[in-house]
Image (tube, rainbow, N blue to C red; front, side, top):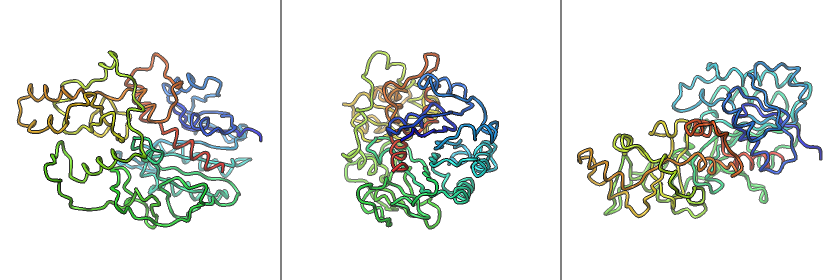
Amino acid sequence: MAALRVLELYSGIGGMHQALRESCTSAEVVAAVDVNTLANEVYKHNFPSTPLWAKTIEGITLKEFDRLSFDMILMSPPCQPFTRIGLQGDVSDPRTKSFLYILDILPRLQKLPKYLLLENVKGFESSSARNELLRTLETCGFKYQEFLLSPTCLGIPNSRLRYFLIAKLHQEPFFFHAPGQILTRFPDLEDKIQVQEELCKDKVVDKECDSSSLPSGEKSLDPNVGPRCSSKKSLPEGAFLFKLETAEEIERKHKQDNDSSIQMLTDFLEEENEEMSRYFLAPKFLVRYAFLLDIVKPTCRRSTCFTKGYGHYVEGTGSVLQTAVDVQLESVFKHIENLPEEEKLMKLATLKLRYFTPREIANLHGFPPEFGFPDKVTVKQCYRLLGNSLNVHVVAKLISVLLG
């Protein structure tokens, strides 16, 4: 079988390329396209033989696209127009312009690609851009299936819920094809699943895996992902509610940490050494943001999504690691609000909290040990690039599903 010719758009640091390798697909990336200079340096560092086009997608003519004669498109368009914390400008956001250009070009290609895979943030599934994508695919004769997936589906202790779409041209529908539905787990390739709605049952959903925001009429197929169960649970007797948490959040974390189908964080961590001191949280951050941190231990089976602001901003950018594993978190936070600043800092310092290193985040994102960053790339830049990237293992599995 001839190697697939793959076009990688919005290539970033090469997460899609790495996933293609991991899927063991016979393929050649005929061009990778991105305008981010720093990301391109990392891409070239890891995939030196791949043609890298440092230009805007709108700057590529129809004739240039035709000349590439590609069989597959892998792409991860800018997510900012669709994020919950952004302005959600959707198709009116200038950053969507290149994606709309692709949709305009696609039907006019001399040879349509056989396969397409797209990744974006949760929120894309309810956008006008997604509706335009589906219309274009249907016009061109593609069969497609949408997903909302997190690495936890593969036993990886990191919540990074993302929208995915896979499509194939003029072929039989996927055996798991569920028209109008967004699947929230990988299809069972042995069982040829029967699509059906499953309620969340006894399991408590991760904060990011709330399917109550799925478009009207679309159902979750994951028993672990469903409409938020609105219970009014009280704390168990003797339990201590620390930080800005609710009883439900404590129960959710407890269930995640006891889910043996998910690996422990320790499997993804670097060995502690003297150089780790550069990653410890500064005293000013400890005092100011202690109640906003998501603190995990190496034995935990969870971590929150790492964003491009990790290491620079504290709230909502990713978990921090408690390296003093024998210290009880509750004992540190109990009555801490009323202490003088110096005493508060002394108690917090006993936890020995540090940021995850770029290598550890890369591990959680599925990048292999040989994937590296040029020496000139700073730690802050690594965090930013990884925060804008994707989970390699999830995409690799989807490529395998797409190719059957």
